[in-house]
Amino acid sequence: MCVILSQFTYTDADVVRLENQAAALRQDILNMIHAAKAGHPGGSLSAIDMITALYFHVLRIDPKNPDWADRDRFILSKGHACPALYAALARRGFFDPEILPTLRQYGSILQGHPDMNKVPGLDMSAGSLGNGLSIGVGMALSARLHKQDYTTYVMLGDGEIQEGMVWEAAMAANHHDLKNLVAIVDCNGVQINGWTNDVMTVEPLADKWRSFGWRVVECDGHNMQQILHALHTAKTMRHCTAILMRTVKGKGVDFMEDNPAWHGAAPSDEQLVQAICQVKEGGRAQ
Figure 1 (cartoon, rainbow, N blue to C red):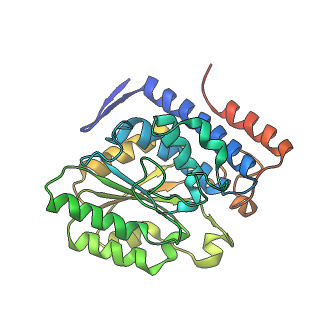
Figure 2: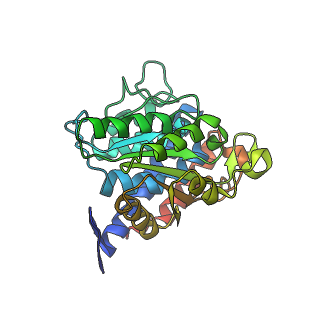
């Protein structure tokens, strides 16, 4: 099967390739956090399938020219999930994968929150939650003002969108009719203090985005075909669009899945072996 999209095509072979790539990146995430003895595996594992689709199939980027003016932009607003982004950037060729095990070490470019002044390919430094969509609005406006044809993608956490600044940015994006802006919400249902619905529910989430004038696309955030279709739909709507990807915190490792304790914790030696075996089995490589 070959699916024809306006900006890209994909085949069944591409889907398998991306699934295998995501499985490999899950191993990178686990190894990095284990080596650092700290980090955020849950939200990194829930986000990695979408990040894989973006960096290995959809984004218009050039690892040899990371500051290319016409590149698509990607903002990881939920910056604590940076192990997922670091793994993708390294395997995409922006820097040497050999430095991945230096996550969070003194002097490493790979700190616990991403620093765009140190890591090639990063479009935004992140730390305090809630800022990414506002910066994405600015990037999208800049593209219009400078007559550049790039798309800005912003990934947020569902806990993160409890922040009021997110909705100010959503209102501004619709007001300015930013057709080149896509918000991606990682709806894994868990945040640092527990279940998102218990801390402060954000549902009905689709209705909220629509009430701010956005188009909404929903998908299974671990189904590569659905992810690719959602990205295509968002691109062709020609209006600011929110992709609500329904995911599982800690996806791929059974003892991490849907467990708030793994929002920010590192696996032990024994847990790492078990987790790596599971994510390898989850890939489709033969």
